[in-house]
Image (cartoon, rainbow, N blue to C red; front, side):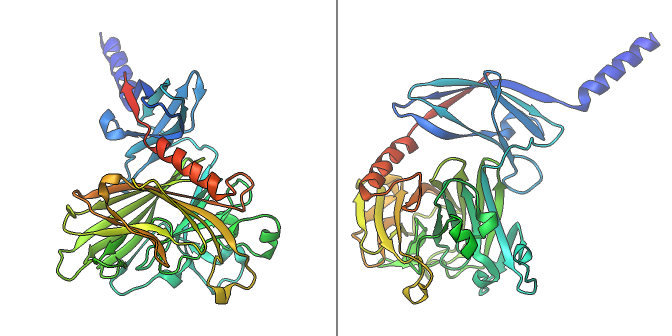
Length: 407
């Protein structure tokens, strides 16, 4: 009897030393448009397990996945992976969550960094200090303290950066060939790298809206994010399948007679997709405020609009100010933004700087998408006609509905 009790105790101890959750996940594309590289997020709080590692398979084939701690509290919040779904297609995946181990390492398909400039160290591979987050107080401008002026992130197709100052402009880096290269070029290729086909900055943004930057609106013009108590950037997710950059503005007083609001913006870039998802969360409903977004009016650009939140342009300009243009060539780019039409109060005519929108929100959040291509690409679009056709197909894909069932 004693031996049996000891055996039962040992069995119970082994069984409770680790735990797992196994289930089937069926994804169905409910739309008439194919979904390519479609992002899938599972909220781990729904599975009652302190997940430390995970495995996703389909038809016996392992699918790369990613666990992310979004709030930085040491607990993973989401399981992320990607899949292709043809129109009306269903696929079933086997998912196993474990409360032991660590996330499996898959080949990186994305990259993100943020760096403090360190001018005392001259070796090129040690010049900058990599950091995970930075927050500054009112009146402090870290723009020149940071290499490439803020967080930068990429996949094999495209690269973006977010200026860490009152503009918070979204800027872009175009590529000639597919691949990850920001770790090597740090957004600014040297002469040897340029000669070997590395990409470069392809857009001058100045004080414009750049590529879909969200600003305030004073009734006549866009407003920078000037009056804030604290400003921060944080690298939330580093791959291997997606990067997430957080931009935080605390106690932003857009207008003197309006209540301050906290604004947190998340920029998500997924492997194999040229678009970037933008999620904005406010500390309260902002129906008393107006916002502006849109695209820079690239010189001599052609415009596209479906008059329902999708807008684009195709144009050519210096990627830096003309006085600094020595050593550069003019760059041709296609830009695009896709906004939910119910937040578009007005689509304004193009001015000398921007293709602007005025936005009105009856909630505390906003999600929209931005995208671009460079004419330098060996794999992308090379005319306004082709770029605008891409924008139309892109919007259809963004509207795809994928349902999830677990059992």
